[in-house]
Image 1: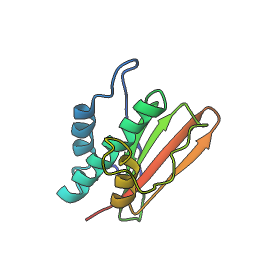
Image 2 (image 1 turned 90 degrees about the horizontal axis):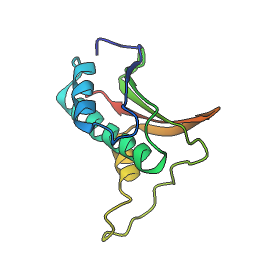
Image 3 (image 1 turned 120 degrees about the vertical axis):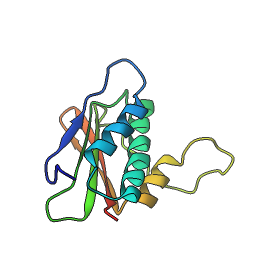
Image 4 (image 1 turned 60 degrees about the vertical axis):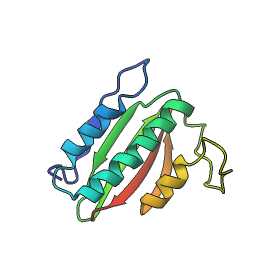
Length: 131
């Protein structure tokens, strides 16, 4: 990743569905120095986090991706403006339900994930191992 330690942000259009194809292309560009497995996992995880923010928190305020200095992970951060809405703990889902697998997927792919809140915003973050 040419941007080790530097946070690169993707700008989202307002009042429309997130352009997931553009997000994935942007991620591939940002992650050009990591392996294909890491890129694929980051694309999948980021798509889930962005979709959750769009569906449950009135959209994405900002998406950032970077590789923290001295660590073999890629960190994805998705901000929204609904700090009072926190992701629910991953629980066993009804296999017949078409929803409810996003955070289970995030938990399975990431080495760690969490939620930070601040004045008027929430950041859902996850770290993906660099393979």
